[in-house]
Image (tube, rainbow, N blue to C red; front, top):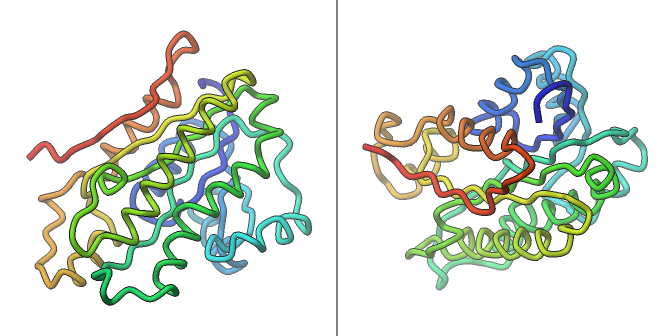
Length: 232
């Protein structure tokens, strides 16, 4: 996807999303960054001069189409990068519907809705949809039930989309990073009551490299699933 491509990115504010946005920005690609509110949008434009923003809250997927109807959607989208995510640990015995729904909305339903709203552009460009999943999308451990369920669902979304959009030339990749040094990881450690040492985990830059590899792959090949694990 060399040249002036346009990428719509969620989660560009921190962690893996920020690493991907910076790399694409530095190489001169056009960025459209999803922000949950106008204040966040201003911060993102300051961080990535020349980028555009779309304001929409991933916590309320049923409001996204309404929010976008009052804004200008990009005419061209070469890739849709779903990188935003939330995590809230807890045992099934303790998790309330509110905690379930908060994670399902941001991690699964909003990516489905964003994809639906941008598919016309992605079909025209024969673009790519990349879902940043998680090791928890493949295995669920104690206290990770709700988050893992949202990420298992995200794998199902990606797999179904890949079959459905093949005829339109849309490529779909799921990336499954292991624990990555990021604000989200810091929160997880707090919830686990463990000390956080970022040097033990994957650098977001390494995950960004994996994502860009999938994005830039020549058209004769597709990467469907890409698992990235700590090398230490």
